[in-house]
Image (tube, rainbow, N blue to C red; front, side, top):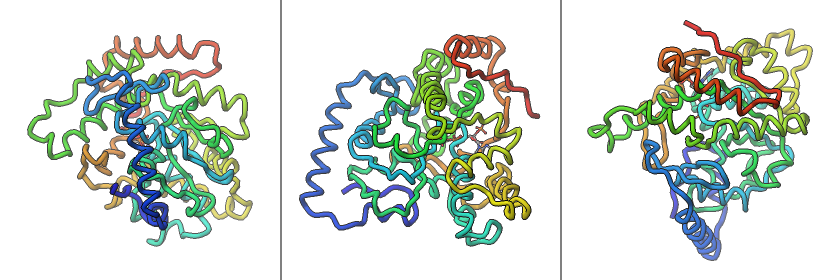
Length: 355
Ligand code: PAP
């Protein structure tokens, strides 16, 4: 039987509900068929530390392809549920913490130790949808509290029709910083996984850059990922809220107000007066979250798809790319970005460096 995802109650409930032998056999068959289909897809073995497969025009890590297929067929969220979507390393952790703290602000105190964000990682508070479907078991999501917040990296075109009935918050980030963050993340994951400790030669940034620029990266092409949600946010602004990491960094308080409003739990005048918005921003700030014991864990495993918690908290800065990319590389990514986004109304202005 499959292992259970790295998530705390109540999420583990969806795997505990009574399952008959028939259910178990059905799930086995379903996942066997997904794995067969996955084995027929184009594959890139040169993206470290895991292979990518081309599934419906996006490069998905091999182990996530069957879960993506399962999501497409079996994810039936309620209209009250909320989906947080990002291309990897665009600020999922931050957005998860902010959304969780905002939605549950009446259940937990923001400063006392009963707030789950102080003892669980943001990823445990808002688990990745792909991880729910990773365990060769179709989870019973109906047992979860309503609303539930899910995070996902699925591109818009891969979402099932059913997902469009819930509200979606999309967060994107300058591709130069996203790429640099991704490289650090993958490298730290490789290093933390014991089986790679003695063999890792370090991360090949030039190779990864070449692939990323050509659109081959985790859940890439990056630009298609962003554009899918950007266009939908223009078409249905009441269903898709579109944020940029750089803008959120500049004015987190206002963005949080918009987030609360969009999620259906706007801040009241009284809360505004009491500084609740500012308190949530502070609770979820990079410096605060990174210092929590739970977020300092350095153990990870590639096999179990479990990155170290600490790898989600590196620098949290805008413009850090300048320390890792040559001007030539930066210009190349900017040129691709300009070309891909041309005429869309979306742009990533050059990110200024934060020392
Ligand atoms: P994921 O897609 O794998 O879940 P994600 O959380 O999107 O990762 O990205 C991690 C980045 O967000 C890291 O960026 P960096 O490598 O450039 O430093 C991480 O530091 C940053 N990050 C994490 N938490 C916060 C936060 N509270 N505020 C701002 N940035 C944050």
